[in-house]
Image 1: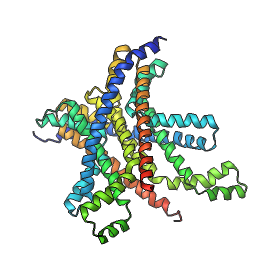
Image 2: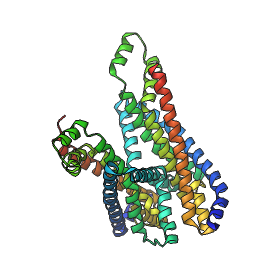
Image 3: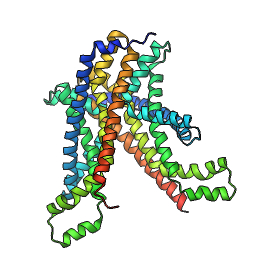
Image 4: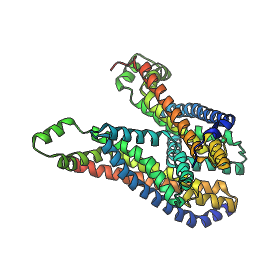
Length: 220
Length: 219
């Protein structure tokens, strides 16, 4: 078997496009998931019994079922109830819904780890509930959760590969497509692994940097 | 009503496929535990080569999506002249991917044992292997059980990806059914319920085990 990486340079444009779609779906899905997750965590803090139950059920269902099945449900099942989505839109929405459950858990754990005394002090000082959330809980929580937040973001970056199954033209889909046409599977898969490893390592490095940055303000 | 009826009709097929999913996951988990134990042992080894290899193993299999690992095995082995049935390729891929996570979980467990205990064991003349089997392993397993149970649930979910290479497990069967009865919404909903029930049962079983071990530890 000859190893010839020219197949990658010949298709550089397509590969770059695939990488762009991977980045796009990953970042959009992450933003969507984080916003929805934070909203759910905030609702869990101050919600009534039924909102809490509904949110808990949502989180449990998303965490208890495979991402691929959720995607199929959304992409192939959606049209039966009038939800006709483009693959990329379905991918971003699916990734966001999937991520939101994990992000909600991360935020919830962050809120839970704030010392009781801080909240009691806030009550004693006559802060309103919203003031406590905004001035005491959110700033501390955002620092505490940086490592688990990064972890979830990295998990989502790898889940974008699954989007190729619903025909999203991202890195995995594009490169395996090139492989099937040229039979240069080795070259293509090496590039694929390198791409994801780079993405994951870069994100992890960024996460460690952020941890050091925000950690400076924490008193240990 | 027609919907309910057609869902009921597909249920036996899906349950059969669910058994396949559980079996594939359990077999992969056993292999993953064995490989993970070996990699964990290598990470604690005195040889820098073994330590480096183990670290590379963990980095690679945790840094690349499982789907990509699966595609690698599926496409590359035949071009290297090795013809594996897709089921075997699937089990190998899931095992190796999970083994990296298992190795890290176990490493955390062994690092969680207070060093004082090992020093005490050495002073009492308890030799390496006995110390490992009687002191380190039982405690590491107790410390890591929640994380290991979590890994079991992750593998059950990750096993859905092997549908991509044509293994007839739960997700693949659902695809076939949805393609023939044109009811993807209902079918994938039902499949989601089945995965959810499997995972709920396993996580309950895990908590039961944790309580057992905690009780045995406290008495």
